[in-house]
Picture 1 (cartoon, rainbow, N blue to C red):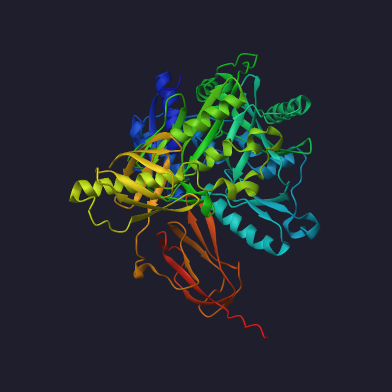
Picture 2: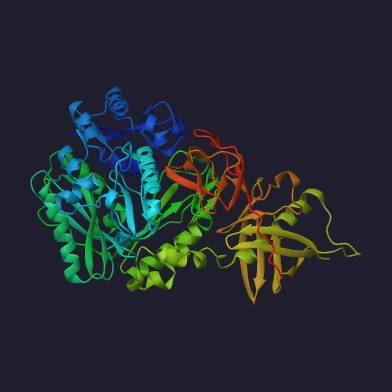
Length: 631
């Protein structure tokens, strides 16, 4: 029997495993990097062991250090979570050789399936030879052989880009997984991403716990997932389940695993088998009424699964809440998570709590919110409303995007589900959410009330010009104009049609079109204002000359590390619009910085290894002068 378990991971998945361990009476051990010293998973564990350093390669990817930590803490089992070393057969062997129980499949099964190239070979699917890719093969997908989560993955539509994307994908994969192997395969445009959850014991029983649809993705990483996958023809669903079971039996699989497919034109294309627990496993748990982590531990202890797979019920949907700005190329965000409060009736899986800091070293996912309902429509409505009511004060998040996605007609109409959803709809989904304008009015009046409370003042016989305040938010800026009134209140002159019912520094009531709404307002010293579910930024009345930058300046879009500069790039070089100049790594993703226009590189402040803050000047490109048209 397992009595003490170490989780070789961090954040949300470590907390999730610890929760089950508490229910089972198993004590827990966390490992942590220096960047994670105060993290929630460390606080929730019964014991914790430091892995010196901050980069994954120094800490969570060091299998030798993790095994030493398990032995030092008296653990008798290791759960790998997902990502990092979860699909590393050598790590699994190291754990087993140390006399510890490995919560995962046999190392031989990991070797057969965890490498996407070897898994395809096992099923008779040959990847493309990068040296022989021709124009007729395009588009193709460059993909990391190990790991997942969209890291080390690139779509190539131009043959000239292939070599560079192979290099970039390999570098990103090596950083994220410790394995830089990549391969090339045909890219199927806008199919549905469907997967099958498996659970197998060591006695030959294989459960296929239905399907999941994970088609809503950005940068090849899943955003919204649901179970069961809606609208699949019965014959196709049966084929998916059968293929998944055959793949598991072919390698003597034991434990939890997932077989992934891309469904297009009524056909299923095998993608990979993930030999671990998936991020989206909660939707399967909600539909089948099981605890997959508890079952993983039971299987590792030698238990037999019942011969019959549990029966499904209802529908479940999960949304991943990220610290990122979808309107700025999904740029990850960092900073203090000042308040994080999720309403009741929602399953919350998270590695953060109010007051925690979101740093630059790891994935920007804050939490997963999951709901279950008797029908898909009911689950969609329930999750969208729960996200609206979730209070998140701190960095920009994708919360508004999630709400808009769940309510978009393409999502509610199952027939339109595919992986191209965000390519088609992102501009419309990142416009100002409903209620942004009155939220800005509430922010302005709350600020005015706070000033009045501190300094006094208000209505005067000689009426001066209107006060003006501007707030930025999703979809652009909102200008508010108002003036104090004789009775101590306020009159809003822009936008029109707003009547002030009451105004205080933390709560404002407004009437529009005969309907009174109440807004809770929280303002922070950095100019960020949270009004209900809206995140606004107070704009300064005048531009600070020190903040002006020269035309063509390339500023860091997020804090991170410069990992590469284009070969031979030097000041004075001619560059072309869109040419890659340098690469930043932030939150385990690599971000390419390109020339904004054709011209001359007049400054280069980036160097490999340099840490930069958001807004740091990286380079300057002086655009070439275009000759004036002759009349």
